[in-house]
Image (cartoon, rainbow, N blue to C red; front, side, top):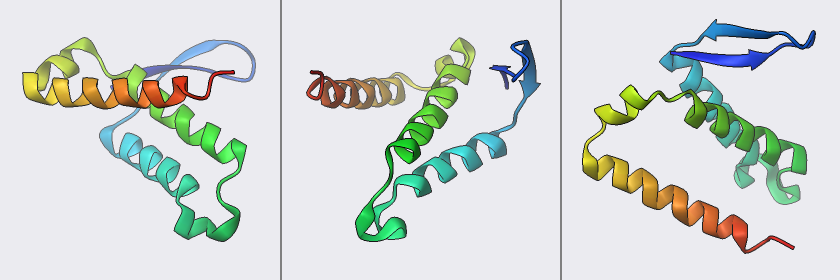
Amino acid sequence: MKIRKWVDMGQEVEVEIGADDIRSALSEAFSRVMQDRLGEEGPTRQEVTLALNDIAIFFNALTDQQIDLLTLGQRNIVQVFLFKAAERFKRFQR
């Protein structure tokens, strides 16, 4: 799988990442916002933002061909999940 990433010099480069890289990034994102890891203070705004960024990178990296590999039922589960997540975020718009 390939994704596009901006480097500090402002030049777009393409890097090859594998499933293990994605799994690791998502696992790290999850651990950043886990309450039992963080204790009572909870995650910071930056930790939540970094976790959401990792998840966005994952979804943006999926190709149409990869999505097409899923069954209709699996695609519907993801669609409903993402719709519900978007609705939760809408509740906080001010």
